[in-house]
Length: 52
Image (cartoon, rainbow, N blue to C red; front, side, top):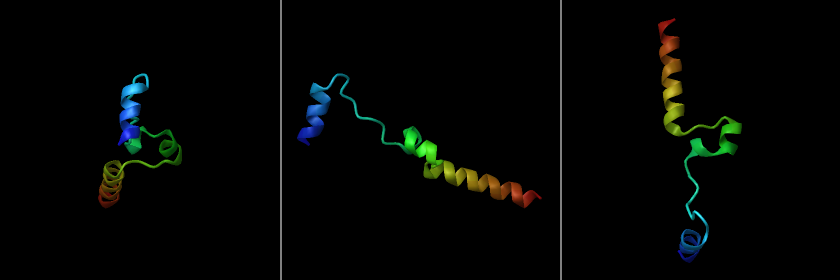
């Protein structure tokens, strides 16, 4: 907890980086999305395949 406090108090603009997957450049490069986006994509694919 002390390290978190130090970061917030003493680092300029002491904010925490976003921990969301969609904000991570490394995850974007690998093509990894958050679970909600992946679920939405799969449902849309199934819906499109079902119409054929």
